[in-house]
Image: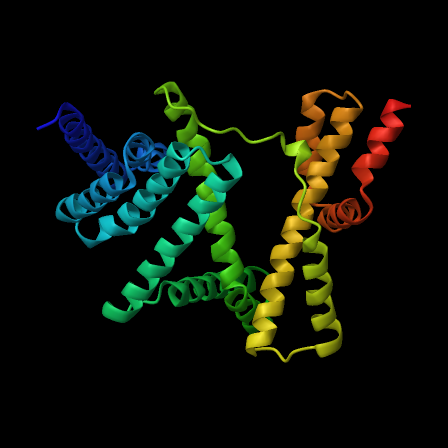
Length: 313
């Protein structure tokens, strides 16, 4: 057996063992799992960054099978998304892609894995996680109402308002899931890339957050969605209503991020200390409507160019 193949098999076996150990700790050790859960992807990412795609897929499949044997069906909820995330991270590093590509591919891979698990659970185990979440939220609101009513004699949220809130949450579930997946991908990447760099791998870097710029086409998407909501006015509960509401929510969040990036850019150009950017980010959330408008204006009128010109003068 050639030396390279022996090394590849040995390293693969080590990564499967390491993956299994980290997964077991994340499943069965309560406090430590809060930290270790974000490093489940590390062994697969490390292996995928060093070896071919076919070998990496094989190691990922073996890791999922071993996790199933050790932890049962519950382990699949962790093994599948984190394995796929690790493969996406490692493959992007091996092919020398940008960090933006790495982030987008990881988020998309995790989203696909969650979708597959949801469909499998719905089809074969008759388990609808999303409906259970809505039911839990309803129960929590009802319990809170009972407690407040027993103390003050007033109902803070009427049943009609509660139905409206829950229906809105249900319609916005695609946006909520997308934000959850994007946040999860960001944490996984942020936790694992520094370690992969320490292991001698050449990992990509993000450009500074202050230089973040959305594509200008985002403005046109926003105008289309805004026109649909103002002039078409789709009825609540229809498919178009769901699409418009989710797209408008996602675009608003993107423009909010653009606005926060503009605040960072301004503070950097003015030479303000770094802690002011942290304060500005925190204040941006209660002032989200104004900061979102800043993001739209920055994308449409190139406010950064004006700031740069004023700074040079």
